[in-house]
Length: 401
Image (cartoon, rainbow, N blue to C red):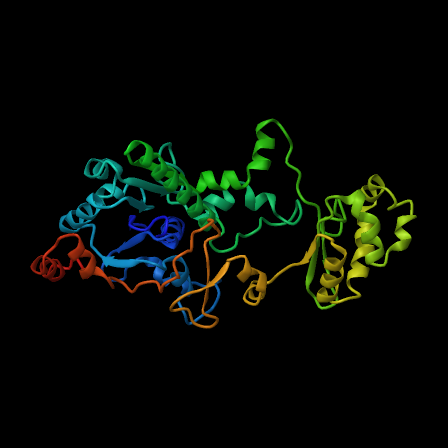
C-alpha cells in the first residue's frame, strides 16, 4: 500500500504550480480528480503551442504536469456545478486551487465556502502575491512574480551592465508546487494528530524570495549585493565558464582552491603557473583573475569537452560540462537518480520527468497518461452518489461534459 493510497484530492487549479503539487501526491498513490470547465478545459492544454517554447507536435506540457489524474469537466460558474463540487469536497481529503482570489467566491471555491463542508479537508491555496495586502488580487506568473519581483532576474545577469536574465519555462512554478506539496503533507500530519484539516498556502512571491534568500538576507542586514563581473574579468577565474574546442562550455568550481589548485594547474597544462608570482597564491590569483582567465581560455580551447570531462573525473576534480536540455535525454545518471522514469502515453523515449522525492520503502505510481477533457466525468459522478438520471440532466444542461 502506497503512503497516500486512499487519499482523495481535488485539483481545481490551472497551469503548473498548483497542479504540480497534486501530481506529487498522485505519484505516491493519491486519487486526484482534475476539474476543468467544459468546452476548452484548462487553458494550459494549449500553452505548448506558444512561441519560445520547445516545438513539438505532442502536448508535452500537459503530459508532464497533469499525469496520474481522472478528469471531470464541470462548470463551476453554475450553481449546479458548485453543488457537485461541494458534494465531492465532503468526501475529499485535499482541495488544491490557484484561481485568482476575487474569482473563487464566484466558483464556490473560496475557503469560507469550503471550510464548513468538511472539517478534515486540507484546503491548499497558491497565489501570486499572497492572501492579503494591496497586491493580493493581482495575477502572478513565475516570470514576473517569482523570477523578476524576487530579484533573481537582476542578480543572475552576466555582468552589471547586461540585461536581466530570462527564467527557464516553469522555473518558478515547479519548485513552488513542491512547496505547496510540503504544506499539504504538513497539514495532513497535523490532521493525523488532531483530526483537523485546515487552510494551507504559499505564493510565487514568497517562493521567489526563498530562492533568493541568501542575497535578500544580506540586504536585510545592510549588506551590499555584489553583481557578477563579465566572464573575461571574473573575481575568481577558478569559478568561471570556459569554452572547449568543440564549442561546449565547461564550468569550474574549485571551492577548496588551496588544496586543488596544484593538481588542477598541472591537469590543464599550466604547470608553470605554480611558480608564477601572479598565480602562485590565492590572493595573487584574485588580483590577476582576468589574466588567469585568458590563460584558461587558451588551455580549454585545446581539447573537446568530453576529453576534459574524462580527465577531470579521473583526477577527482569537481567540474562539469554545461549540459544542454537535449543532453538530459541520454543522461544515464538521470535514470539512476530517478529523475527520468518510464510513463504511459509518452512518445519518443517513453520517459517522463519524475518528482524529485524518494522515500525508503515507497514505490511511486507508474506515471499514467494525462487525461482528456472530462474523460472520467461519469465515473467520478457515480462515485459521488449521483444517479444516471442526475448525470444525464447535468450533461443536458451543459454543466458536465
